[in-house]
Length: 137
Image 1 (tube, one colour):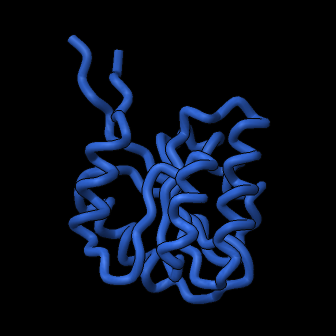
Image 2: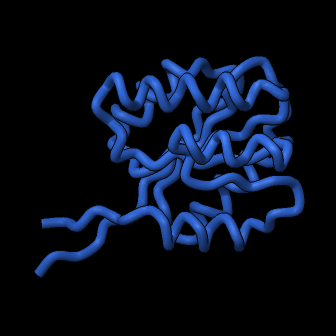
């Protein structure tokens, strides 16, 4: 009988943005909900983030972007996931992201966006319902 392994989440802070309090709060909430969380730390490149997700066999990546570079950073992470045949890794994120940019991010394949005011409960529930936990053999 197969059982579900915990969802594995890479939480990442891409670029030069040094504000990681929100990313740490979300990482802790996901962990407290029973997920395995890998926090990559500050100032990660998209390449480092995708490498970590692949190496850690992550089910999803959560990006925290407060710098205004969300269009560039999310796009590059999606490109790298495609280049590395890792499109099964769900990409979501949050931060200071204008409402007008959300449809464009969804078009490129970002599965979920959380803007200021989103609760950790909303994020946990979204990940739980949108990311499939792998089944153990």
